[in-house]
Amino acid sequence: MKRVHVAAAVIRGADGRILLARRADQQHQGGLWEFPGGKVEAGETVAAALRRELHEELGIRVTSARPLIKVQHDYPDKQILLDVWLVSAFSGEPHGAEGQPLAWVAPRQLPEYEFPAANAPIVQAARLPAQYLISPDGLEPKAVLQGIQAAVASGIGLIQLRAPNGYDPQYRDLAVDAVGLCAGKAQLMLKGPLEWLGDFPAAGWQLSAKQLRQYAAKGRPFPAERWLAASCHNAEELALAAQMGVDFVTLSPLQPTLTHPDAAPLGWDAASELIGACNLPVFLLGGLGPQDSERAWQIGAQGVAGIRAFWPTV
Image (tube, rainbow, N blue to C red; front, side):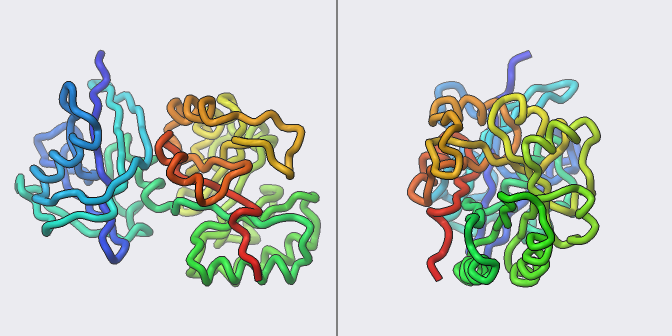
């Protein structure tokens, strides 16, 4: 069965809301909501297909777009490749040119809508930012909290409180304060034993590769309303992350780093290959900074994660 190549768009308005369209009842997966787009024709680039489809379906002309995520999905009757781009600017007023209902939806409300199964990773990618800040080790607790406060004030939306020296009581105390600083402004990801999950209901959880191997077969440790991520370094760990149903992963190290000098770097080509086989939003990590975002997007990554290059100077 030939895989159908579809160009789809996460269209973000000036107010941050995302445009959805409802599939006609007689269509494949009819009645469900979707991200607008359509089939890539023979000899057509994805960017050209996206522009054409969005003009035909919505009456808009795309003026700024970039790759977001690729998703391969096998339905019983159809195999598809969803080539999803983030559209951040367009001209014209979107309307259902083919009679389809439209809805502008806040990213946090996307899980409330019913999508085709293939769209699950796109929903997560649409809700995630393009940068993931990880706190450095070696700082006094006060300095860590000042840095988080400055990062939140600057608009950073996803922050991991790193625990490089084990999960001691000091980390738990720091986590309580960090949760307060991020409340309603940024998503905080914590690390630690899963026994702690109930103590921090507002936080997401970043699993270590060791935890991934230990718990993947048991599935998600908490409901879909909470963010779950995993630290991955190879194809095996990415497969375990998918098996566990995590929402996103970090893939590292892309380049040599000071924090892990002995780890063999993946390099851009190997990372591209791994991302291509992974139906999850992927943040590349290791020796990267904001200047690497564009290259990361072009190989299918959600964006870049970083410690030193992203940590605010307070």
